[in-house]
Image (cartoon, rainbow, N blue to C red; front, side, top):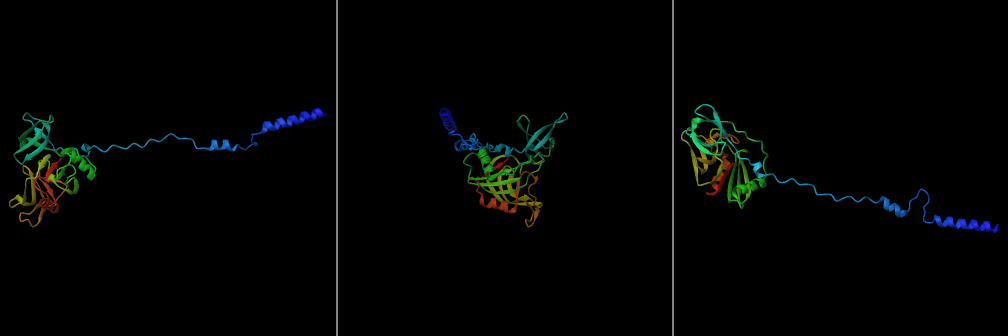
Length: 257
């Protein structure tokens, strides 16, 4: 009997030792619970990709005035009209890139295909001008945008003003290129027909000047802007043309594109 009791006591002692460290059913060990509820470690996130700045050449594509050159044997070939002497001749560029002067009546001007372009920021205009004129920019620049029909005035690398303008029609394109202002004239025009004011000359027969006045200069004869209606000159509002005439020095760069 004593032996049985001793064995029972030993069994109970062994069962108790085996149960040490176990948790009651349905409850977790606090240490293991902390490990299981910890948030998983995520891989580091990469910074979002940033779009490269737009290419200035795409924002300011060259304006092309198309035309057809009539051939003596019949037919015609497409050309680019660079400039014109009204009623006399055209300066043209062939698809090959070569240039020539041809008689006025050999050319049929066509309506230009003007792309829909967004309005550029001042920073984008400056960046484009630097690609065309160098960095730093000349002290004074007037950028004639033939696609958007605007003139942007830049002084010491800062945009001062963006002005609406009118430029040459299909038969009298405003020539593209880099020029410099060399003289000013307060009055110019066709005697007895119309008068322009505050002209600033930059190349050939081309000037920045006001819209058209009557010959007496007391009324505006044609004040339309943002149009292709001139014989190649760049027309501005009376306020803008006078401001340029009075403030911009000779030698200012005129970039036409």
